[in-house]
Every structure is written in C-alpha cells, then in structure tokens.
Image 1 (cartoon, one colour):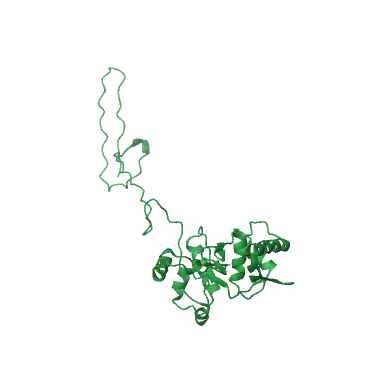
Image 2 (tube, rainbow, N blue to C red; image 1 turned 90 degrees about the horizontal axis):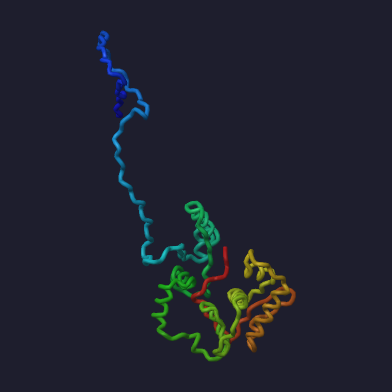
Length: 265
C-alpha cells in the first residue's frame, strides 16, 4: 500500500492567517475503498533488489575444462534381421530418431551412417557399431586384446586396403591415392561383387553443393586409380555398358573392422 500526502502551503506575505471555523463533520460512515494515487504524489520506499547472477550453463558430464560439447553419438546396435523381427527397418529407426531430434532441438544437425561388418563376424551388435564408428574406448579395448602387432603391416606382399586408416598398401608400400580416389575404391570395396553404375558413383561420392562431374569424369578417376594400383589394377573391373565392380583376389586383404560406411540415410 502507498501513502499519499498533500503538499504543504506556504505564505508569501506577512499578513496573519485568519482561523477558519471548521465545518461540521458528517456522521461517520464505513470506510471507502482505497483508490490509486497518482505516481507523482506517491511515496514508496526505495528498495533495490540485489542483482541475481545469471545461472551458469550446465557442463556436460565428462567434458574436460577448456573444451565444449558440440554434439553426441548414440550407438544403436541392431542388424537388419532383428529390425525386421521387430516390425521395422534400420531406415525407419533412423528417421524416427531424426524426427524426435527435430522436435526437441530444431537447430540440431544430424548425420547417420550404417556400420558394416562381414557376415558372421559375431559379437554384440553395439560393439560392432562402436568399432565401425571408431569409438576411442572401443578401439583402445580392441588394441589391448590384439597386443601391439598390426596385421596390416606384417604382410609384405599383396594389396592391403586399410579402410580404417584410409590407405592402400601395395607390397608394403603406400599407393598414394588422393582422397577422392580412395573414396571411389572404398565405395566399390564395401559393395564387393556388385556392379556400380556411374550415376550412382556421382550421386554418392559428390556432395550436392559440389559441381557434379560427368560420367566421363568418373572414367578418368577410375583410370587414375588403376594406374596407382599398378599390377593389381584388375581388382577394379569394368563392366562394359554398366559401370565398375570390385573383385577380390587371393592376395587382397581388406581391413574394415573399424570403419564407418559411406552410406548416408
């Protein structure tokens, strides 16, 4: 409640002020309801509330000082057969998670990749996924189990296509492929035995923002890739009128236990 006071009057002359007879007061009545008082006549105590500091943004658990979280990975371990038994598909699971993310955080960006492993590889699905997506803890555990030896570096002859390290060794020597050449070889390797047409290679290996090459450009990339594969170039075979196919030979070793698939949902 605010208290209101009328301003005091002052006289400007020395004349005495005559007393006035106070008028008769009316009979007491019930108190009238309070009325608001103009702000210029209201006196309120000047009490300033203490400044409340803005709450600090909560830190994500296990994020070291001096770093910031930029996103997260949710490993989902399920193969196509289990998804089918549950009445769904891997694609539908991905789309459902994307929809939920868009509802919770519309500004979030998503990227999904399917983890590949040889058929009958065994092990828990989620462990296979963690290795395929190069989870540091899973890789460290794998190295501990295998010791310090690297099978890829102990084969002096033949072709080593090391997808996890993005390199190709020819008889122990690096082939020196460019990024795009390795992406092209990797795409064929991960689809071993299937002929890939040029249109699919363009669609999958070149971003929408990049200038899409022509089918002739694909042929040039394949020819350069083959020249760097030297006497092993026939592992990339031309299927006339269709496209290209990867053919595994007995002297070809592929390390793909810890590599993400280039497939994007």
